[in-house]
Image 1 (cartoon, rainbow, N blue to C red):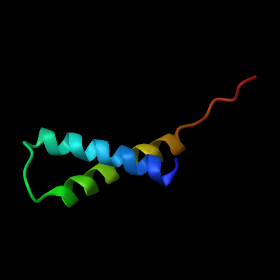
Image 2 (cartoon, helix red, strand yellow; image 1 turned 45 degrees about the vertical axis):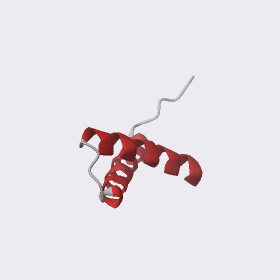
Image 3 (cartoon, helix red, strand yellow; image 1 turned 180 degrees about the horizontal axis):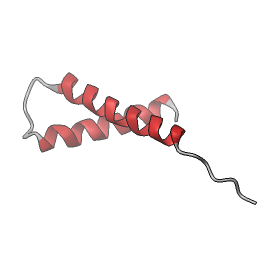
Length: 55
């Protein structure tokens, strides 16, 4: 995934998490970091999943 695409995905996830938490002020970095960890974890899972071979 391109860095800009990943940043956009992190931004959207962070915004979602921020809204879910009641929109607290001053916690932007916390939500960005949490979103980045979640997305990184999803990317690692995708890499670990066995890929089927088409025949």
